[in-house]
Image (cartoon, rainbow, N blue to C red; front, top):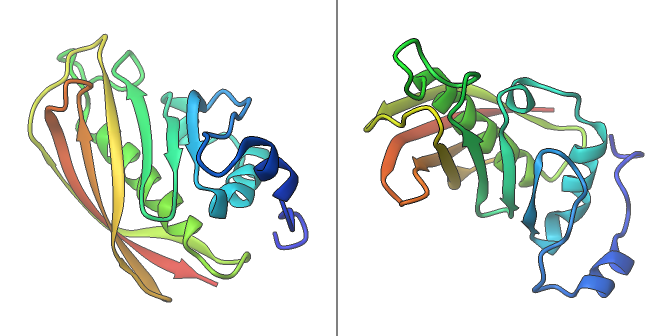
Length: 173
């Protein structure tokens, strides 16, 4: 990966300024996507090189990337509901682990390292009916060289807690 990762995006940063969101033309990205300048190159690498995956299949769309927080939204539709027409708990776990894995990866010092789920738990607090959407926000609790632990809250657009999750990730070199 290190040879593919851009060395410097200073021209793009100079064009947009550090306080403005970077615009990214990608189906997984929100039109108002914010990318912290320090992780811009890694996010562009992710956009250009990561294959379609479970997150893309169920409609996860990133809203914000930084080393201290990753935010994404997910629709509650036929891809993410259980038979009773409400958000499937497994879909919430997919959103949680996706956010934690990306957040941990953004914090890795070595370009060849990966962050993969080791353990995840989730408490499902309230149902969300089909037709809605949820917003997940992941923040780090521990960022070590061999493991990281991230806290994830999934909420409705009205800020009602849907799921509280904690994910431990192994750092593979």
